[in-house]
Length: 512
Image 1 (tube, rainbow, N blue to C red):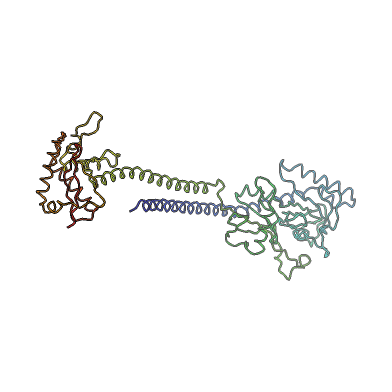
Image 2 (cartoon, rainbow, N blue to C red; image 1 turned 60 degrees about the horizontal axis):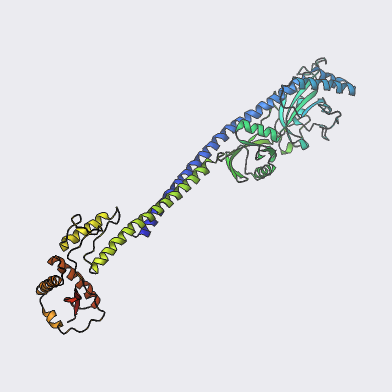
């Protein structure tokens, strides 16, 4: 297997493992985020109804407490406008003084008479009597129409012009001194009513969000009135998200009473559920209006408008601490780092091994080319054993000292005995008149004769050598093989040449 293929396999394995880790981590985090969002939504869905029901009860209790103040009885019964304003102001002041410090102040506290005419309103100097009445003479506040006709207290949702959706509580004002008619089954005389109302604002929605742990939006007739969405750290409501939510409600993307639904707002995924706002009363309300009853909300057989207001709780499928993104980034960086380290390790190992292999290869080529005196020096920890093994093999084949048994000169180089000098082969050797005799000589006689002549010539030139017969013949055969390939001949033999005191062996190619 090539080094490139090995590197590709390693890279592929690391990439696949990194991808698997990334996928498993992503899936695990996504599942956990969805489960957390589901749990938050379930809790918020259960709590939001209870929360708004408690708020409705609190508002109706305030209306009931105000209706019991004698100043409002006096204000309704007097014919003097100035006296009415004085008595009503005293009643309003007593109520606000009794409220707990820090409690949210009602947006509307008003007194109406038995006909539904507006008599006085807190912090409003003058009022229009028929401000809350329709052309038909009934009140625009459905709860007020019911309370003025029967002794009961109602907590409901009321849409009031530019003030938007309001949580309203209505309680009757009873005249304790009025004579009781024998035909009156209630045994009381209702002379008017108290209206207490709180506007559903974004600030209140943000307060509810802190209690619920989820985002919340209040709507009426599919129009979102207030939401807990803010613009970052700014407490100002994010109206753009409110408009998106209104479009979802109008299109049926969020249906009341349906199961949880997944929706996306401004790039953030939410699990959402819509729920109708609760209403309460101390006595049963009239039957709910149908389309044919739209004009019959007052009179002898009134009906009561169906609830059109509701709340949407939205649990974000999000990671506030961005833990998932950090872990995913860590996995990607870890995989990239592992890949880089693995490839760098392969590259460095390749360089180290290739350098050692190149030295061994050069030595082998040198021996193939006839240099049997070549020895392999240490090349590195990885291939030192191979180099030593090759030296031992050559020593035993050539009959020279094995590694560790050599003699060294003054410079620390090993003393190599039995050196044989060869002349380089010619590209086109000249004709040799003695070629026939040389070719007909038997191989054993040839090797023995050349060896004997070589030793004699070395002694005659004053440079005797102790080259063994085996070493000498091995060197001859190696050079013969090399030169046969070079000359493309049948055989190669050597003739002894002595020139200027130097003894060499000259190759003679034999073609026939």
